[in-house]
Length: 244
Image 1 (cartoon, rainbow, N blue to C red):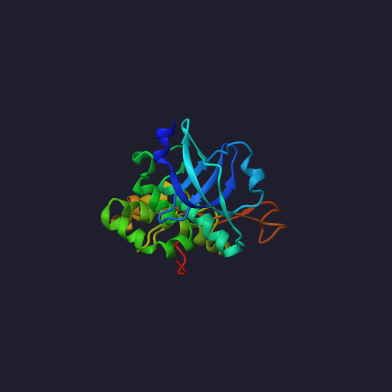
Image 2 (image 1 turned 90 degrees about the horizontal axis):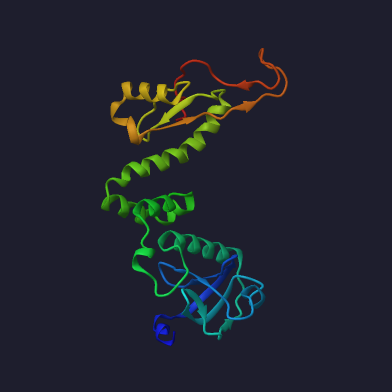
């Protein structure tokens, strides 16, 4: 057991959150790593009732788990909303790059996420897309096959935006294929919509276009011959509005 301590990790960590199996210690490196750490005697939730908490300690392997040497240097820091948000983003990034590390030493194959997982994480919201613009570009240039995934993920992002606009125009229940470069025709079913887009623009059909459905809106009271509780929507094939 003592021989295994050579695989220990000494440094500064943010005690980030208490989970059922262990407490998450997030290191300060780039890219960050998150360790699942077990307490020796007293539970970490009792030692650190308020998290995050910044400490200096030594992590040690212990029977296929991680514990610490029982000594911590504490830093009396106040974590505001901005710092807490950045720590949570670092934690999410660590989960993508290596997951929560449950034992030491760290297996190399266990800390290498797929490029697809990395790209999806970089694209998950506006803040990530702006912050990791260079990483997104590097991934796509390194692996051109990821360009399809990029367009599919961004298609879903725009679909959430456009579906609300379509609903406001009364175009609910209609499937629209989205393409970054073209305005494509709509249809009542996703396959029909895709066939029409393929006929008009074959280069945008397939993996680089994504069908989405305009959201429905419930009507309260009768309007324009509609009964209460009916769903407002368009019938037949309609063109994509000019706002797209």
